[in-house]
Length: 503
Image (cartoon, rainbow, N blue to C red):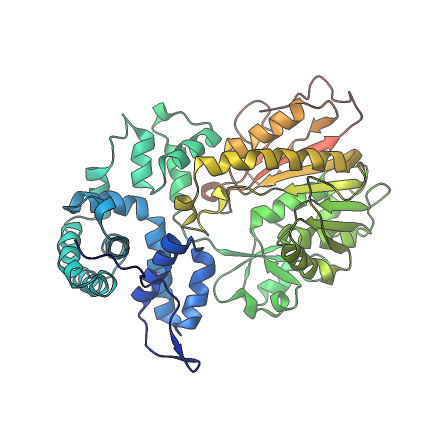
Protein backbone atom coordinates (compact mmCIF):
# COMPACT_ATOMS: atom_id res chain seq x y z
CA UNK A 1 0.00 0.00 0.00
CA UNK A 2 1.47 3.41 -0.93
CA UNK A 3 2.49 5.70 1.90
CA UNK A 4 -0.15 8.26 2.85
CA UNK A 5 0.65 11.89 2.27
CA UNK A 6 -0.44 14.53 4.71
CA UNK A 7 -1.25 16.95 1.92
CA UNK A 8 -2.79 16.10 -1.43
CA UNK A 9 -3.22 18.10 -4.59
CA UNK A 10 -6.20 19.98 -3.09
CA UNK A 11 -4.02 22.87 -1.89
CA UNK A 12 -4.25 26.17 -3.75
CA UNK A 13 -1.59 26.60 -6.43
CA UNK A 14 1.66 28.13 -5.32
CA UNK A 15 2.53 31.60 -6.55
CA UNK A 16 5.80 33.37 -7.11
CA UNK A 17 5.69 37.19 -7.23
CA UNK A 18 2.06 37.01 -8.42
CA UNK A 19 2.78 34.57 -11.26
CA UNK A 20 1.51 31.09 -11.92
CA UNK A 21 4.57 28.90 -11.71
CA UNK A 22 3.37 25.77 -13.49
CA UNK A 23 0.84 24.77 -16.09
CA UNK A 24 -1.97 22.64 -14.72
CA UNK A 25 -3.97 20.13 -16.74
CA UNK A 26 -7.78 19.86 -16.61
CA UNK A 27 -7.41 16.48 -14.87
CA UNK A 28 -5.24 17.99 -12.15
CA UNK A 29 -7.81 20.74 -11.55
CA UNK A 30 -10.61 18.17 -11.40
CA UNK A 31 -8.62 16.15 -8.87
CA UNK A 32 -7.96 19.30 -6.88
CA UNK A 33 -11.72 19.82 -6.63
CA UNK A 34 -12.33 16.23 -5.50
CA UNK A 35 -9.63 16.45 -2.85
CA UNK A 36 -10.92 19.79 -1.55
CA UNK A 37 -14.43 18.40 -1.26
CA UNK A 38 -13.10 15.43 0.74
CA UNK A 39 -10.46 17.20 2.82
CA UNK A 40 -11.96 20.63 3.44
CA UNK A 41 -15.67 20.01 2.88
CA UNK A 42 -15.40 22.52 0.02
CA UNK A 43 -18.35 23.27 -2.24
CA UNK A 44 -17.50 22.23 -5.78
CA UNK A 45 -19.78 24.78 -7.45
CA UNK A 46 -18.00 27.59 -5.61
CA UNK A 47 -14.46 26.23 -5.81
CA UNK A 48 -14.25 25.13 -9.43
CA UNK A 49 -14.78 28.54 -11.10
CA UNK A 50 -12.08 30.02 -8.87
CA UNK A 51 -9.64 27.22 -9.71
CA UNK A 52 -10.28 27.55 -13.43
CA UNK A 53 -9.44 31.24 -13.25
CA UNK A 54 -6.49 30.66 -10.94
CA UNK A 55 -4.94 28.09 -13.29
CA UNK A 56 -5.82 30.01 -16.44
CA UNK A 57 -7.96 27.25 -17.94
CA UNK A 58 -10.36 28.42 -20.63
CA UNK A 59 -12.39 27.04 -23.50
CA UNK A 60 -12.06 23.29 -24.05
CA UNK A 61 -9.69 22.82 -21.11
CA UNK A 62 -12.14 24.52 -18.74
CA UNK A 63 -15.01 22.47 -20.16
CA UNK A 64 -13.04 19.23 -19.67
CA UNK A 65 -12.10 20.09 -16.08
CA UNK A 66 -15.75 20.91 -15.34
CA UNK A 67 -17.04 17.68 -16.87
CA UNK A 68 -14.46 15.59 -15.03
CA UNK A 69 -15.03 17.22 -11.63
CA UNK A 70 -18.82 17.40 -11.72
CA UNK A 71 -19.27 14.11 -13.58
CA UNK A 72 -17.08 12.22 -11.12
CA UNK A 73 -18.92 13.71 -8.14
CA UNK A 74 -22.31 12.87 -9.63
CA UNK A 75 -21.30 9.31 -10.49
CA UNK A 76 -19.26 8.54 -7.40
CA UNK A 77 -21.67 5.98 -5.97
CA UNK A 78 -21.79 4.01 -9.19
CA UNK A 79 -18.05 4.25 -9.75
CA UNK A 80 -17.31 3.09 -6.21
CA UNK A 81 -19.40 -0.03 -6.75
CA UNK A 82 -17.50 -0.74 -9.98
CA UNK A 83 -14.10 -0.01 -8.42
CA UNK A 84 -14.88 -2.28 -5.49
CA UNK A 85 -15.45 -5.11 -7.96
CA UNK A 86 -12.19 -4.36 -9.78
CA UNK A 87 -9.88 -3.76 -6.82
CA UNK A 88 -7.95 -6.26 -4.77
CA UNK A 89 -8.25 -3.89 -1.82
CA UNK A 90 -11.33 -2.65 0.02
CA UNK A 91 -12.05 0.94 -0.96
CA UNK A 92 -11.64 2.00 2.67
CA UNK A 93 -8.02 0.76 2.51
CA UNK A 94 -7.09 2.79 -0.58
CA UNK A 95 -5.26 6.06 0.00
CA UNK A 96 -7.92 8.79 -0.42
CA UNK A 97 -6.05 10.75 -3.13
CA UNK A 98 -5.53 7.53 -5.06
CA UNK A 99 -9.20 6.60 -4.71
CA UNK A 100 -10.18 9.97 -6.20
CA UNK A 101 -7.81 9.35 -9.11
CA UNK A 102 -9.51 5.99 -9.70
CA UNK A 103 -12.91 7.65 -9.63
CA UNK A 104 -11.74 10.20 -12.19
CA UNK A 105 -10.44 7.37 -14.36
CA UNK A 106 -13.67 5.40 -14.04
CA UNK A 107 -15.68 8.43 -15.11
CA UNK A 108 -13.54 8.91 -18.19
CA UNK A 109 -13.83 5.22 -19.11
CA UNK A 110 -17.54 4.80 -18.45
CA UNK A 111 -19.18 8.16 -19.14
CA UNK A 112 -17.08 10.12 -21.66
CA UNK A 113 -15.75 9.70 -25.18
CA UNK A 114 -12.14 9.82 -24.02
CA UNK A 115 -10.21 6.93 -25.52
CA UNK A 116 -9.63 4.14 -22.98
CA UNK A 117 -5.85 4.14 -23.42
CA UNK A 118 -5.76 7.91 -22.78
CA UNK A 119 -8.02 7.63 -19.75
CA UNK A 120 -5.84 4.91 -18.22
CA UNK A 121 -2.50 6.51 -19.08
CA UNK A 122 -3.38 9.96 -17.72
CA UNK A 123 -4.86 8.40 -14.57
CA UNK A 124 -1.68 6.41 -13.97
CA UNK A 125 0.33 9.63 -14.25
CA UNK A 126 -2.03 11.35 -11.79
CA UNK A 127 -1.82 8.41 -9.40
CA UNK A 128 1.96 8.61 -9.36
CA UNK A 129 1.86 12.35 -8.59
CA UNK A 130 -0.92 12.10 -6.00
CA UNK A 131 0.02 8.95 -4.10
CA UNK A 132 3.54 7.92 -5.06
CA UNK A 133 5.24 5.65 -7.58
CA UNK A 134 3.80 2.47 -6.07
CA UNK A 135 0.26 3.67 -6.76
CA UNK A 136 0.77 3.81 -10.51
CA UNK A 137 0.80 0.05 -11.07
CA UNK A 138 -2.23 -0.45 -8.86
CA UNK A 139 -4.18 2.26 -10.72
CA UNK A 140 -3.22 0.74 -14.04
CA UNK A 141 -4.44 -2.72 -13.02
CA UNK A 142 -7.75 -1.50 -11.57
CA UNK A 143 -8.64 0.78 -14.47
CA UNK A 144 -7.79 -1.83 -17.07
CA UNK A 145 -10.38 -4.06 -15.39
CA UNK A 146 -12.90 -1.20 -15.38
CA UNK A 147 -12.34 -0.78 -19.13
CA UNK A 148 -13.48 -4.34 -19.88
CA UNK A 149 -17.20 -3.40 -19.69
CA UNK A 150 -19.42 -0.42 -20.42
CA UNK A 151 -21.43 1.36 -17.74
CA UNK A 152 -24.68 -0.49 -18.37
CA UNK A 153 -22.96 -3.85 -18.13
CA UNK A 154 -21.20 -2.89 -14.94
CA UNK A 155 -24.45 -1.73 -13.29
CA UNK A 156 -26.05 -5.05 -14.19
CA UNK A 157 -23.07 -6.85 -12.67
CA UNK A 158 -22.63 -4.92 -9.41
CA UNK A 159 -26.05 -3.51 -8.43
CA UNK A 160 -28.48 -5.46 -6.21
CA UNK A 161 -31.39 -7.21 -7.89
CA UNK A 162 -34.03 -4.61 -8.72
CA UNK A 163 -37.03 -6.76 -7.82
CA UNK A 164 -35.60 -7.80 -4.45
CA UNK A 165 -34.02 -4.44 -3.50
CA UNK A 166 -35.21 -1.56 -5.72
CA UNK A 167 -33.75 1.09 -3.39
CA UNK A 168 -30.33 -0.59 -3.39
CA UNK A 169 -30.47 -1.05 -7.14
CA UNK A 170 -31.27 2.62 -7.79
CA UNK A 171 -28.61 3.72 -5.29
CA UNK A 172 -26.00 2.11 -7.57
CA UNK A 173 -27.68 2.78 -10.91
CA UNK A 174 -28.39 6.50 -10.28
CA UNK A 175 -25.46 7.13 -7.92
CA UNK A 176 -27.33 8.32 -4.82
CA UNK A 177 -27.15 7.23 -1.19
CA UNK A 178 -29.95 4.82 -0.40
CA UNK A 179 -31.63 7.22 2.01
CA UNK A 180 -32.04 9.81 -0.77
CA UNK A 181 -33.56 7.15 -3.04
CA UNK A 182 -36.06 6.27 -0.29
CA UNK A 183 -36.83 9.95 0.35
CA UNK A 184 -37.51 10.60 -3.34
CA UNK A 185 -39.84 7.60 -3.60
CA UNK A 186 -41.76 8.78 -0.51
CA UNK A 187 -42.11 12.30 -1.94
CA UNK A 188 -43.43 10.84 -5.20
CA UNK A 189 -45.79 8.50 -3.36
CA UNK A 190 -44.23 5.46 -5.03
CA UNK A 191 -44.00 2.08 -3.33
CA UNK A 192 -40.89 -0.17 -3.70
CA UNK A 193 -43.06 -3.00 -5.02
CA UNK A 194 -43.48 -1.01 -8.26
CA UNK A 195 -39.75 -1.06 -8.94
CA UNK A 196 -39.75 2.75 -8.53
CA UNK A 197 -39.75 3.89 -12.20
CA UNK A 198 -40.80 7.46 -11.35
CA UNK A 199 -38.17 7.64 -8.64
CA UNK A 200 -35.57 6.47 -11.13
CA UNK A 201 -36.58 9.23 -13.57
CA UNK A 202 -36.32 11.84 -10.81
CA UNK A 203 -32.89 10.64 -9.70
CA UNK A 204 -31.60 10.30 -13.26
CA UNK A 205 -32.48 13.96 -13.75
CA UNK A 206 -30.06 14.85 -10.95
CA UNK A 207 -27.29 13.64 -13.23
CA UNK A 208 -28.17 16.10 -16.00
CA UNK A 209 -26.62 19.50 -16.52
CA UNK A 210 -29.17 22.23 -15.70
CA UNK A 211 -29.70 25.16 -17.99
CA UNK A 212 -29.11 28.67 -16.69
CA UNK A 213 -32.44 30.34 -15.92
CA UNK A 214 -32.63 34.12 -15.76
CA UNK A 215 -35.27 36.33 -14.17
CA UNK A 216 -35.98 39.82 -15.49
CA UNK A 217 -36.96 42.08 -12.59
CA UNK A 218 -40.47 43.42 -13.27
CA UNK A 219 -40.40 47.12 -14.03
CA UNK A 220 -36.66 47.08 -14.74
CA UNK A 221 -36.28 44.60 -17.59
CA UNK A 222 -38.30 42.06 -19.55
CA UNK A 223 -37.69 38.60 -20.98
CA UNK A 224 -37.67 40.27 -24.39
CA UNK A 225 -34.53 42.17 -23.36
CA UNK A 226 -32.84 38.88 -22.47
CA UNK A 227 -34.07 37.15 -25.62
CA UNK A 228 -32.53 39.97 -27.62
CA UNK A 229 -29.19 38.99 -26.01
CA UNK A 230 -29.52 35.41 -27.21
CA UNK A 231 -31.60 33.81 -24.45
CA UNK A 232 -34.86 31.99 -25.12
CA UNK A 233 -38.14 32.52 -23.35
CA UNK A 234 -38.99 30.41 -20.32
CA UNK A 235 -41.82 27.89 -20.51
CA UNK A 236 -43.91 29.22 -17.65
CA UNK A 237 -42.47 32.19 -15.80
CA UNK A 238 -43.58 35.51 -17.32
CA UNK A 239 -40.29 36.95 -16.08
CA UNK A 240 -37.98 34.10 -17.15
CA UNK A 241 -35.56 33.22 -19.91
CA UNK A 242 -32.99 30.48 -20.47
CA UNK A 243 -29.42 31.35 -21.33
CA UNK A 244 -28.10 29.05 -24.06
CA UNK A 245 -24.43 29.53 -23.20
CA UNK A 246 -21.83 31.95 -21.95
CA UNK A 247 -21.41 33.80 -18.69
CA UNK A 248 -24.60 35.42 -17.35
CA UNK A 249 -22.46 38.22 -15.92
CA UNK A 250 -21.66 39.18 -19.50
CA UNK A 251 -25.24 40.41 -20.02
CA UNK A 252 -25.69 44.14 -19.34
CA UNK A 253 -29.03 43.50 -17.63
CA UNK A 254 -27.37 41.13 -15.15
CA UNK A 255 -24.42 43.45 -14.51
CA UNK A 256 -26.79 46.33 -13.81
CA UNK A 257 -29.04 44.36 -11.45
CA UNK A 258 -32.02 44.44 -13.84
CA UNK A 259 -32.01 40.65 -14.17
CA UNK A 260 -30.37 37.78 -12.33
CA UNK A 261 -29.82 34.05 -12.38
CA UNK A 262 -32.80 32.41 -10.66
CA UNK A 263 -34.26 28.94 -11.09
CA UNK A 264 -37.66 29.03 -12.80
CA UNK A 265 -39.36 27.15 -9.95
CA UNK A 266 -38.06 29.78 -7.54
CA UNK A 267 -39.57 32.47 -9.76
CA UNK A 268 -42.89 30.63 -9.86
CA UNK A 269 -43.03 30.18 -6.08
CA UNK A 270 -42.72 33.97 -5.68
CA UNK A 271 -45.29 34.48 -8.44
CA UNK A 272 -47.80 32.17 -6.73
CA UNK A 273 -47.53 34.20 -3.53
CA UNK A 274 -48.11 37.40 -5.49
CA UNK A 275 -51.10 35.87 -7.30
CA UNK A 276 -52.91 34.70 -4.17
CA UNK A 277 -56.01 36.70 -3.30
CA UNK A 278 -55.75 38.91 -0.23
CA UNK A 279 -58.53 41.19 -1.41
CA UNK A 280 -55.98 43.11 -3.50
CA UNK A 281 -54.78 42.71 -7.09
CA UNK A 282 -56.17 39.88 -9.31
CA UNK A 283 -53.72 37.26 -10.56
CA UNK A 284 -54.04 38.31 -14.21
CA UNK A 285 -53.00 41.82 -13.29
CA UNK A 286 -49.95 40.51 -11.42
CA UNK A 287 -48.58 38.84 -14.56
CA UNK A 288 -49.30 41.96 -16.60
CA UNK A 289 -47.36 44.17 -14.17
CA UNK A 290 -50.18 45.75 -12.15
CA UNK A 291 -49.61 49.29 -10.97
CA UNK A 292 -52.06 49.36 -8.04
CA UNK A 293 -51.95 46.94 -5.16
CA UNK A 294 -55.37 47.86 -3.88
CA UNK A 295 -56.35 48.39 -0.27
CA UNK A 296 -54.82 46.03 2.23
CA UNK A 297 -51.96 44.82 0.03
CA UNK A 298 -49.11 47.18 0.83
CA UNK A 299 -46.64 45.39 3.10
CA UNK A 300 -44.75 42.25 2.12
CA UNK A 301 -42.15 40.27 4.07
CA UNK A 302 -39.38 37.90 3.04
CA UNK A 303 -38.61 36.20 6.34
CA UNK A 304 -35.21 34.62 5.53
CA UNK A 305 -34.24 36.39 2.35
CA UNK A 306 -30.53 35.76 1.80
CA UNK A 307 -28.95 35.78 -0.71
CA UNK A 308 -31.86 37.64 -2.30
CA UNK A 309 -33.17 35.84 -5.40
CA UNK A 310 -36.85 35.72 -4.44
CA UNK A 311 -36.58 39.06 -2.66
CA UNK A 312 -35.41 40.73 -5.88
CA UNK A 313 -38.41 39.42 -7.81
CA UNK A 314 -40.89 40.16 -5.03
CA UNK A 315 -39.55 43.69 -4.64
CA UNK A 316 -40.00 44.23 -8.37
CA UNK A 317 -43.58 42.97 -8.16
CA UNK A 318 -44.23 45.07 -5.07
CA UNK A 319 -42.88 48.19 -6.75
CA UNK A 320 -45.32 47.82 -9.64
CA UNK A 321 -48.22 47.57 -7.22
CA UNK A 322 -47.43 50.37 -4.80
CA UNK A 323 -46.33 47.92 -2.11
CA UNK A 324 -43.05 47.57 -0.24
CA UNK A 325 -40.99 44.53 0.74
CA UNK A 326 -39.12 44.07 3.99
CA UNK A 327 -36.41 41.44 3.44
CA UNK A 328 -34.92 39.95 6.58
CA UNK A 329 -31.92 37.73 7.18
CA UNK A 330 -30.26 36.75 10.44
CA UNK A 331 -26.75 37.10 9.02
CA UNK A 332 -25.40 40.54 8.28
CA UNK A 333 -23.39 39.61 5.20
CA UNK A 334 -26.43 37.94 3.63
CA UNK A 335 -28.59 40.93 4.46
CA UNK A 336 -26.09 43.08 2.56
CA UNK A 337 -26.46 40.79 -0.46
CA UNK A 338 -30.21 41.12 -0.22
CA UNK A 339 -30.01 44.91 -0.03
CA UNK A 340 -27.90 44.95 -3.18
CA UNK A 341 -30.44 42.68 -4.89
CA UNK A 342 -33.52 44.79 -4.09
CA UNK A 343 -32.05 48.29 -4.20
CA UNK A 344 -32.71 48.91 -7.91
CA UNK A 345 -36.46 48.33 -7.47
CA UNK A 346 -36.90 51.19 -5.00
CA UNK A 347 -39.46 49.07 -3.15
CA UNK A 348 -37.40 46.87 -0.88
CA UNK A 349 -35.28 47.23 2.22
CA UNK A 350 -33.13 44.57 3.88
CA UNK A 351 -32.76 44.29 7.64
CA UNK A 352 -30.73 42.05 9.92
CA UNK A 353 -33.22 40.14 12.04
CA UNK A 354 -33.86 36.62 13.31
CA UNK A 355 -37.08 35.33 11.80
CA UNK A 356 -37.70 33.20 14.88
CA UNK A 357 -37.52 36.31 17.10
CA UNK A 358 -39.32 38.87 14.93
CA UNK A 359 -38.36 42.53 14.87
CA UNK A 360 -41.88 43.45 13.69
CA UNK A 361 -45.32 43.43 15.26
CA UNK A 362 -47.55 40.39 14.71
CA UNK A 363 -50.13 40.71 11.97
CA UNK A 364 -48.17 43.41 10.13
CA UNK A 365 -47.89 41.99 6.61
CA UNK A 366 -50.18 41.20 3.70
CA UNK A 367 -47.84 38.68 2.07
CA UNK A 368 -45.09 36.67 3.74
CA UNK A 369 -42.60 34.21 2.26
CA UNK A 370 -40.56 31.80 4.37
CA UNK A 371 -37.96 30.20 2.09
CA UNK A 372 -36.51 28.23 4.95
CA UNK A 373 -33.02 26.74 5.37
CA UNK A 374 -33.16 23.15 4.15
CA UNK A 375 -31.04 20.21 3.04
CA UNK A 376 -30.86 21.46 -0.55
CA UNK A 377 -31.74 18.02 -1.92
CA UNK A 378 -33.74 19.75 -4.63
CA UNK A 379 -30.62 21.25 -6.20
CA UNK A 380 -28.45 18.16 -6.63
CA UNK A 381 -28.02 18.90 -10.35
CA UNK A 382 -26.20 22.12 -9.44
CA UNK A 383 -24.36 20.83 -6.37
CA UNK A 384 -23.16 17.36 -7.32
CA UNK A 385 -21.19 16.87 -4.10
CA UNK A 386 -24.20 17.58 -1.85
CA UNK A 387 -25.59 14.06 -2.15
CA UNK A 388 -22.44 12.75 -0.41
CA UNK A 389 -22.26 15.65 2.05
CA UNK A 390 -25.77 15.40 3.50
CA UNK A 391 -27.23 12.78 5.83
CA UNK A 392 -30.61 11.98 7.40
CA UNK A 393 -29.31 13.62 10.57
CA UNK A 394 -28.95 16.92 8.69
CA UNK A 395 -32.59 16.76 7.62
CA UNK A 396 -33.76 15.99 11.16
CA UNK A 397 -31.67 18.79 12.64
CA UNK A 398 -33.32 21.39 10.41
CA UNK A 399 -36.86 20.43 11.39
CA UNK A 400 -37.22 22.57 14.54
CA UNK A 401 -35.92 25.67 12.75
CA UNK A 402 -38.25 25.11 9.77
CA UNK A 403 -41.26 24.77 12.06
CA UNK A 404 -40.29 27.83 14.07
CA UNK A 405 -39.88 29.96 10.94
CA UNK A 406 -43.24 28.83 9.55
CA UNK A 407 -44.99 29.68 12.83
CA UNK A 408 -43.32 33.09 12.79
CA UNK A 409 -44.35 33.65 9.16
CA UNK A 410 -47.98 32.87 9.98
CA UNK A 411 -47.90 35.18 13.00
CA UNK A 412 -46.47 37.99 10.83
CA UNK A 413 -49.46 37.90 8.44
CA UNK A 414 -52.62 39.88 9.05
CA UNK A 415 -56.02 38.16 8.83
CA UNK A 416 -56.56 37.62 5.12
CA UNK A 417 -52.81 37.71 4.49
CA UNK A 418 -51.07 34.92 2.59
CA UNK A 419 -47.98 32.94 3.60
CA UNK A 420 -45.72 30.93 1.28
CA UNK A 421 -43.64 28.13 2.79
CA UNK A 422 -40.85 27.18 0.37
CA UNK A 423 -37.99 24.67 0.48
CA UNK A 424 -35.47 23.58 -2.13
CA UNK A 425 -36.07 19.98 -1.11
CA UNK A 426 -38.66 17.31 -1.89
CA UNK A 427 -38.02 15.43 1.38
CA UNK A 428 -41.35 14.88 3.13
CA UNK A 429 -39.76 15.65 6.52
CA UNK A 430 -38.93 19.16 5.27
CA UNK A 431 -42.15 19.78 3.35
CA UNK A 432 -45.54 18.21 4.05
CA UNK A 433 -44.58 17.07 7.53
CA UNK A 434 -43.58 20.59 8.59
CA UNK A 435 -46.68 22.28 7.20
CA UNK A 436 -48.98 19.54 8.47
CA UNK A 437 -47.62 19.66 12.01
CA UNK A 438 -47.66 23.47 12.28
CA UNK A 439 -51.15 23.90 10.84
CA UNK A 440 -52.59 21.04 12.92
CA UNK A 441 -51.78 23.02 16.06
CA UNK A 442 -53.60 26.15 14.86
CA UNK A 443 -57.17 27.06 13.96
CA UNK A 444 -56.34 30.34 12.23
CA UNK A 445 -54.87 29.07 8.94
CA UNK A 446 -56.38 27.93 5.63
CA UNK A 447 -54.40 25.76 3.24
CA UNK A 448 -54.69 27.25 -0.26
CA UNK A 449 -54.47 25.32 -3.52
CA UNK A 450 -50.94 26.14 -4.68
CA UNK A 451 -51.06 24.09 -7.92
CA UNK A 452 -54.26 25.91 -8.92
CA UNK A 453 -52.47 29.26 -8.61
CA UNK A 454 -49.88 27.93 -11.08
CA UNK A 455 -52.36 26.15 -13.33
CA UNK A 456 -50.19 26.64 -16.42
CA UNK A 457 -47.60 24.27 -14.94
CA UNK A 458 -48.56 20.56 -15.21
CA UNK A 459 -48.02 17.78 -12.67
CA UNK A 460 -47.40 20.02 -9.65
CA UNK A 461 -49.71 18.48 -7.07
CA UNK A 462 -48.11 16.34 -4.37
CA UNK A 463 -49.57 12.88 -3.82
CA UNK A 464 -52.02 12.53 -0.98
CA UNK A 465 -55.42 13.95 -0.03
CA UNK A 466 -56.38 17.22 -1.62
CA UNK A 467 -53.22 17.77 -3.65
CA UNK A 468 -52.90 21.35 -2.43
CA UNK A 469 -49.11 21.34 -2.10
CA UNK A 470 -46.95 22.05 -5.16
CA UNK A 471 -43.75 20.11 -5.82
CA UNK A 472 -41.49 20.90 -8.76
CA UNK A 473 -39.20 18.16 -10.14
CA UNK A 474 -36.19 18.25 -12.49
CA UNK A 475 -37.50 15.33 -14.54
CA UNK A 476 -40.98 16.84 -14.95
CA UNK A 477 -40.33 20.57 -15.05
CA UNK A 478 -36.62 21.03 -15.76
CA UNK A 479 -36.29 23.01 -12.54
CA UNK A 480 -34.91 22.46 -9.08
CA UNK A 481 -37.12 20.26 -6.87
CA UNK A 482 -38.74 23.15 -5.02
CA UNK A 483 -41.72 22.66 -2.70
CA UNK A 484 -44.43 25.27 -2.16
CA UNK A 485 -47.30 25.48 0.31
CA UNK A 486 -49.58 28.52 0.45
CA UNK A 487 -51.53 29.38 3.60
CA UNK A 488 -54.00 32.13 4.43
CA UNK A 489 -54.32 33.64 7.88
CA UNK A 490 -57.87 33.82 9.24
CA UNK A 491 -59.31 34.77 12.60
CA UNK A 492 -59.10 32.26 15.46
CA UNK A 493 -61.43 29.38 14.79
CA UNK A 494 -61.86 30.55 11.21
CA UNK A 495 -60.76 27.37 9.45
CA UNK A 496 -63.82 25.66 7.95
CA UNK A 497 -64.33 21.89 8.37
CA UNK A 498 -63.51 21.30 4.69
CA UNK A 499 -59.97 22.68 5.05
CA UNK A 500 -58.15 20.51 7.60
CA UNK A 501 -54.39 20.54 8.07
CA UNK A 502 -52.64 18.19 5.68
CA UNK A 503 -49.61 15.99 6.27
